[in-house]
Image (tube, helix red, strand yellow):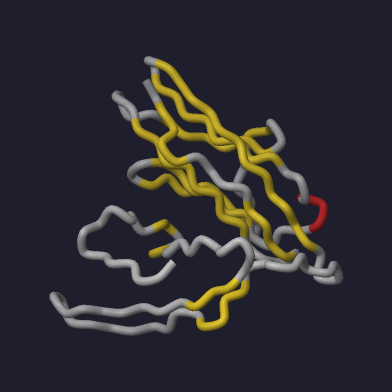
Length: 157
């Protein structure tokens, strides 16, 4: 049956930012993945966001989120003819005039573009703070990099 192996996480952003929801799935046969927004099928719209299918799941991208989307329920639904699974997460949107909560994640040193020859080691730095300690997710073309890839080493938290 279709199974969610990494459900979407709750996302907190400031109005005008982009919110990303990832849903990793597996199953045999390969399942379909859909997102519901407040129980409605998500429909991509120009400049608003969309859904990108990735090899082991799907990515929902909501661009330029606004205060009216605060509390939005995002549900990932996967199914194949053997069975299905679902999981939900919520979007919190802070208005730019709101007092941002203590501990809100801050990127102090963002990663910089770099290049390396094939076979060489490349290093990407990203310094963040927040409370509780934020989780850093590295993306390539807006898709999360597999943390199980043996070529990648994470240093720090």
